[in-house]
Each structure stands twice: as C-alpha cells, then as structure tokens.
Length: 451
Ligand code: 9MR
Image 1 (cartoon, rainbow, N blue to C red):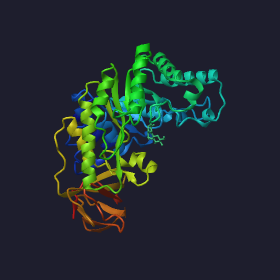
Image 2: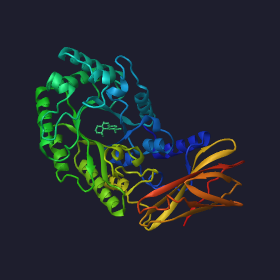
Image 3: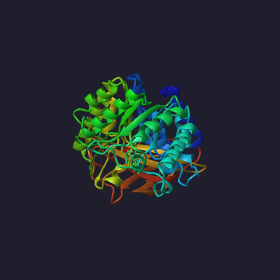
Image 4: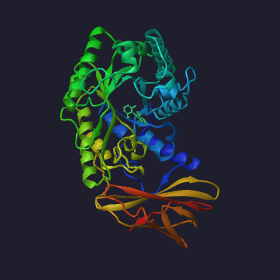
C-alpha cells in the first residue's frame, strides 16, 4: 500500500534535503493545501491516472505525477515501435522506468497498447507477411510484452482504435491481414499471458452515443457472448472545449450494464490559443462534467488524463493553434480545469483567492556553493502586462545570472523585472524565470512579492 499524504510529503522533503530537489517557499495550492486527486479518487472508488513520459519523471514533473495520480499510462513507451524497433531487438528501458516509478509510488499501470495501426516498427509495416506469419508475429508480441510485465499491469489497452467514424472496421495491417478475429485472438493471447490483467478495447470519439460507439458496443457484446476475455472499454476522450457529449454518462452506463468496466483513458480538452479566463472557465466546467459522469457510474473505474501538464501534451504539435488541453499549465501551476476534476471528486474548493497574482520561489538544484532558483508568477482573476518580482535574501545569497528576467541586487534586496517578451501574464496563466545564485552556510527560501 502507498503511504499517507503526510508521510509522502515528509519523504519528499527529506529527499529535497539530501538531493537538493524542489523546495518551494509559497505552497502552491495543488501541491500542498489541496487533497491530491488520487486521494479524492480513492474516496469515490476511482483510480485517477495520467499518461507520462519516462524521461521527465524527476523534479516537479515527477513530484506531481507521483503525488496526484494513482495510475500511470506510458504515453509511448509500450508501443510496438518503442519496444521492438528492430525485429528481435527489444528496448524496455522507458517502459521499465515507468513501471518501477509507479510501484515506488503505490500506483497502478495501464499498459498501452498491444495491437494498433500506428506507431508500429517499420520492419513490421514494411514487411510482406502471410496470414500465418502475421498471426505468429502478433501472438509472440503479446506473449513477450504482457509476459514481461505479468502481475505488474492493472489493465491493458489490448486493441487500440479498431473502428472508423462510421462504425465500420478500420482498414489496418491486422484487419486486412487477419480479419476481425484479430481482436478476439489478441484478447485471448493477452489473457493467457497475464490472467490477472484487465483487458480493454480502447477508442476515440466513442464518448457519446454515436455510430462509432454503437459499433464498439456491438463488438464487446458479441465478444462477451462468445466467451472471449474482455473486461472493459476505454473511452479516450480527446475532447474540444465546450463539446462534452450530452450522452457521455448514458454511454458509460450502457457499457457498464453489459458487465464491463469503463475507463476514461486519454482525457484532454483542447482550445484555440491563446487561452483566456473565459475559455479556462469553460474548460473547468468540461473537466468537471466528464469527471462527474464517471463518478456517477460505479463501473467507471479509472479516469486518466493524457498528460497532466500543457508542456507534455500531444495537442499543440498535432493541432496547430490549439492547446492548453491539460489540467496544469506549462509551469506546473494547476489551472481551473484541475479544480474541475477535484470538485467533481468531492474536493473542497480551495482555488487560490481570485483577483491576485502571486509568485512562487523554488530552488530546483543546489550544490556546494551554488544553486539554481526558479520563480513562477501566476494570476487568477487578475492579469499583468508587466511585472517585477522582489525579495530579500536572508543569508547573504547572491544572484549571479538570470534568464527570462532582468535582475539587479543591492545588498540583500533583489529585484527582477520581466524581459521584453514575457511581461504579459494572462488571467489564469503564468510565466517563469530562472537564475543561478551563490550561497554559503544556509540557503533559506525568501518570500517573493510581485507587483
Ligand atoms: O501522446 C502520443 C504522442 O506522443 C504520439 O506522438 C502519438 C502518435 O500517434 O500518440 C499519442 O498518443 C495517442 C495514443 O497512443 C492513442 N490515442 C491517441 C493519442 C494521441 O495521439
């Protein structure tokens, strides 16, 4: 079992003392004062997850991933193209790292994904295979990957995105080569390789009742009738601002009524950039509606966001001009969307007081005589077109070099003004700047004033 929030916090602080990890002077709301999403979820019988990138699981990203979520999904690390880039040569490094991190933080792992039309290795997609060879390749792949993590994966997205929008089967390597039974066979092989993992079919644009979700419904009904091992459906939920389907809860309910679990597997809600207070408020309402729909159905067991910070989202590169789709901004500040999830999970509203901009000072690394500091300026219910952050060092520290701000120091008094390009802090947004400093003896955290 995982530790309590309090002992996790002490462990985190102890780690900070020994390795010089993140220390914050101003407790940011979703890091300290608020009940973590994972604990709110537990109280409602829901697992709350995020997709992650293995290489980022340190510093603030790792702290938040570990503290706020009770499930991790590797965003890319378990896809066939990642684990077997050359036939017979495997690379499990990132997948192992994520599974180990999850276990160290008392988290589940959702395995993603075994059978898909995308992100397959080129040796596989460029090959010419007989149906018998394709069958062997797929069965071996499932045996190898599911077998490697046997007992350590709570649920597998066994088959990903098998349908077209009109509910017909997508034309893929698998469907074209093996016919529709590739789905039943993949599930059967996955069950054999790890009898305790829950097995899912996962797709997008199946959140509301529509032609595609009807096709998914018919497929899983018939698989159940035939005795094919299937435990749940994954509704990805890559949504657009203001467009949560009205039939979301009803749709979750009808799958639950088949005796299946439902997971919201890849939630994000994108908007046209730039974001503003109105859009962020709508996004909060949308996140809250999605979470509430899951809370309302007992068999909706997992709600996972597809990246928890806007700095780790697929959206901006895929949809030019759109973004800001996740619950935290790129500086790890919780957005209104975060509070939409937390409120739907029964969390108290401890949104920072409105009408204020504040600064959060942290030491991101520290060594013999030097350290690196970071200051985040964030606004809620207010906005800035230029800013100045000031503080007084308490133990003779000095700023030696700054970036994304112009800093001057006179005695113990430090004053940092915005650069030409980052004076604007929108309502609901934030900017950050960094600096290197010198210290000796002690390096206490100052309180920063923003004006
Ligand atoms: O988040 C993933 C991104 O980093 C990859 O570039 C992309 C490639 O298709 O896949 C993303 O994840 C997808 C997931 O595996 C399946 N559903 C859609 C997700 C967003 O594209």
